[in-house]
Image (cartoon, rainbow over all chains, first blue to last red; front, side, top):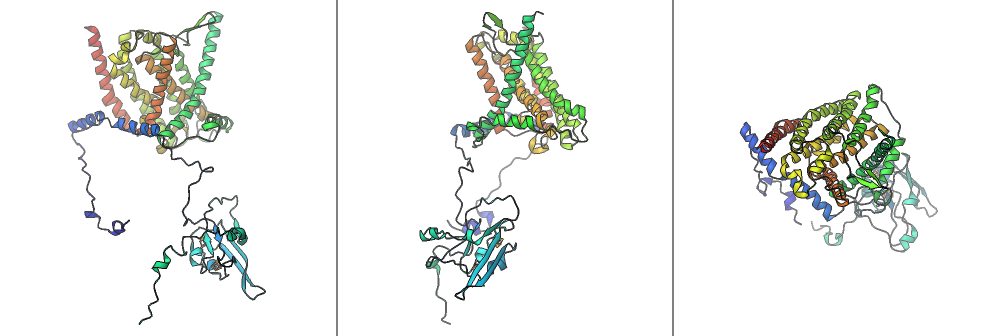
Length: 205
Length: 329
Ligand code: SF4
Ligand code: SF4
């Protein structure tokens, strides 16, 4: 699809035209003629036919929600997920704390410690889903593509504070081993065809 | 008045009450389903197979809900108003012959509670009294939407009555009786004897005013949910609201009986086929009430009054005059 149709703001010469609407009658005779015309043009029957046609066609659009669900897009921002590295199956999160910093509703809490190999390790990581507005900033800011959004939107809770823990968000190790981890395609992720679009850094000058 | 007659009448009354109260409930099921299909939805699906028990669920809900009489309402009138709607709807049914007479265990049953000689006047009058329900309920409630609804009821009241009365006058002149049984017997000779062929204008006018009388969609302005919440029903809850509801749907069924009886041959010669024919006609008219609800927009109260007084009433008068002339010569 070409984008011109959307970017061109000059709508006047793009096939728009004024609909030809007659002036409303002002005198009695004109009004009388309009009433007669409207009464006998059979527009009411057009309406009746349209709904009858739809009933006969029986082309039902209802999604019976708990049993049936609509597919949702890969960019949908629902409850967060924590990804693992494809190479080593270890957690991607490096505990940099950027997500906690950027979160505009202040609902991420992260604690880190130095582990036995002197590496930074996440010891606590919670998101208060009751406060989260699912803006996607945390996923966008994450330098490791570690925190992303998933597709699980049925997170209604009977209390306002409703936390999700690091372990619950993390891709389970057997899913990872089976190679079933899904990459997020929304904010901050690598877009498809990135290889073709990458350019050499211009160092020539 | 002998005992057998008394017992028979009481049985008939009870049967009519039970059947039409149940039909009112089932009518809501059909309404939801048909509206849903016309709007490409499925309608009620969860309670029972294909949502069939939805009616029962609604009934349980209505019966068990707390009966609230809000502060600031005029309590006696507020309490009696729904009863008026439901009671008058069923009272009107007394003069409607639902079936041809039939014989059971050697006893001839006339499926009409009282074949009074002013039948059609009585039915129209009773149905008109039914509109006092919304009007009194609306005025007794303490909010502006109900008041608006009461005012609209009055507007509907003074508009449609004229049209239905004048429209029905021409057939009455032809038949020379006010009893619906006589109407039926007048048209007993088959389709070509139906009054609709000699009185098409009266038929259409009466049909239009039936919509106003029952407050169905083109004239659904008394309880117009999208404009004035539920109008007179805004402050009602539980079974009081349910009575309004039963009254409205029973009214729809009864008027669906009256139209075919007057204009479309009724139950014909009284055979089993004729009775089934009447039921088919009733089903069509009831279906048409739902059909228009899916298809047509609502008119404003002033448009309804304009329509009734300036358009339909002159047509009805002309129709009566022409009928008179034709009958004279
Ligand atoms: S989606 Fe937005 S609100 Fe929710 S945790 Fe991420 S940054 Fe915070
Ligand atoms: S999830 Fe991403 S942004 Fe947040 S601490 Fe881990 S690596 Fe940093």
